[in-house]
Image 1 (spheres, rainbow, N blue to C red):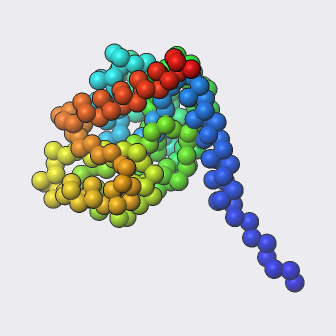
Image 2 (image 1 turned 90 degrees about the vertical axis):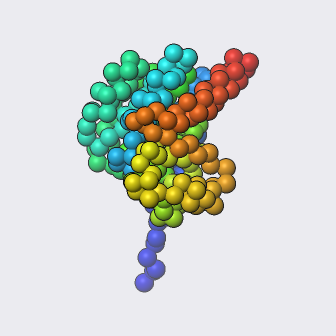
Length: 227
């Protein structure tokens, strides 16, 4: 009897997804737009982080948000109150966005007149880290109540992210959260990761994070205009 033929489905799926992600990335670069993938656990503060950033950036840049959720439009309605363009994406039970779903969202929203697009990914620290969407930046939120040991438990998320936003930093004394330990663990996985402690309630730390994003957008726009 012939041995059982094994097909590595996950590897094939990821390879196809990476190719689609590159197409998304190329399109954003061609039109001078920055696409940001915002990831984090449920309750980490993804939407409240977006609200703080939009307030600081919307007068300087043309911003849009894609809200991904299993089956809800609550976050999209919240973002819509800021006046920026927003579209809701339903994943029909999937725990992450992939490159093709992102492409369809971008096409439905329209991107040619935008400087900065945020995708608020599905809330968890596992699946979104595995699937590229073609983002120029991957931002992940670690909220203080989750604990400073999360880089040890979910290493891939911290390895692939460009930025770690430590949200709810004002509650650190309550939860015995060690920022230096969290930073050390994240940098052991990813020496280049940028770390921004913030509070989405008070606004602490968001000026620095917004300034970082503004520099990225201006650099992209300059490259586009000089092309």
